[in-house]
Image (cartoon, rainbow, N blue to C red; front, side):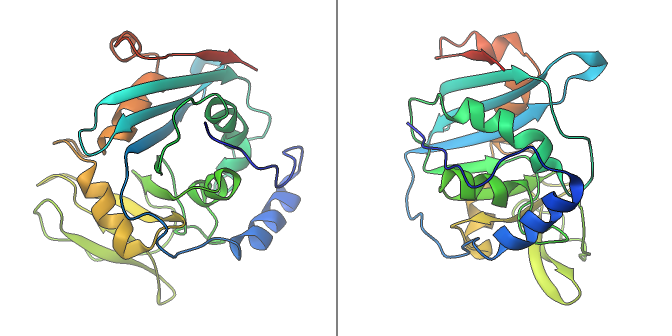
Length: 236
């Protein structure tokens, strides 16, 4: 079971949201508080295209087998507008509602989004990490800020993402010949540890397996939802 902390309310405007990010960023830990894992979770959200409700999905996998063990899905409307850099205020409440219903307790969460690689060093993975008080890693498919030199073509190669001379993440090639993913610290994990954790969760796709299955569950993929798992849909 996952306990969700109540660090602040979500009924805020853009200016207050940015102020909260600046304030909470100092609480993010980049120390490794995970040595081994039994369960790894992937977190993704589908934002309700065509006027439908948004759907947040948490898929918990055994580790290192990466077999899906539990799915929780929460559906509802998003109460915060789409503003780049403030996506956690739009998406986190629905994700946390799904997390609260987990029976298993993941040792590590992979988040489809930024962590430390964020203009205020407080992306979605950092925000969720503080609310969950669990190790989290941001693994995004696009870059929000910073620059990097292209890593070599082989799987596992990576290059630092720099922003004004500061290392904020890593561009990681998870599959030979594909575009890299962008890995950054969420909470309670160092960047040197986050990169191998992401690679160890890959199964031949560009996107790590926990995030690949979470994306499918958030998109309503029937094959994922019919695996005989504990699937639960919440309406908020």
